[in-house]
Image (cartoon, rainbow, N blue to C red):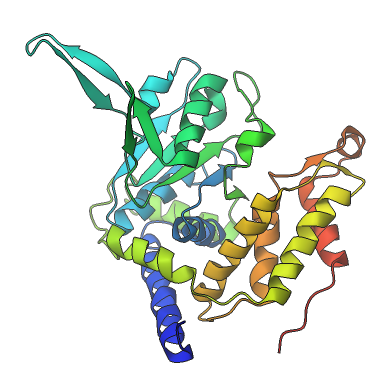
Length: 326
């Protein structure tokens, strides 16, 4: 068991690690601090992230910039109705010159995979991606190949447009660690963005970025995040809130124990990012909505009344007793 001094040193390194990445990403991305921080939490827990927001909010640019900052292999897949599973995971092709079949690996073999507009692909292609996310390996022509480490999928979807889309089923949404709602930037931030473009900023040119960390350091930080202490009182608080989603009258389908595990892991990383070697209720509270909003299904009556998953989660969290920390 690690002593307090060693644990504090680990947490200090993890906090500085996150600060370095955010500083480098900030050279390109103005605002969107909430989105960047939550994607980093997903990265350091090894979980996948679903981004929901209208076009033009720098979702794709943020992921590209983050990948440059961590010196990782990046792949972008534009999901379309005619996209096949082989276009994502790879296939086997016949080489006429050699007279043999060879494997052609798909874009899924990257550290950070951007699945753009994931709800535009048919269910079979979505399933191929989500299976790889869960198993962290891909089977092509009977041969299983492990995906690189770290491996994180960031998927985007447009909440407004519904024509030509295939909504992800609840069971598949559960594969994502967090779902983030990306909002429009404040007025002053938007003015800064436009000013930078007027001064010649080119979002396609990321050559000025430097690698703040390496993939090996990310793997090390992922292991260190599990060292952050999570007391029984905090675990009981997490389980209590998750179980309340199953008993809420407005919710038809509540969150599963997978949500409880996700809350604990994200709270550990959040605590480390704040320089703490232990989890407090204030580390858990910011993660309730991102972790739970895509894991609960409202009753049709509640939806007709304009109730949202975030509304119910907020009420449940308010009603749950908060543990006192020594």
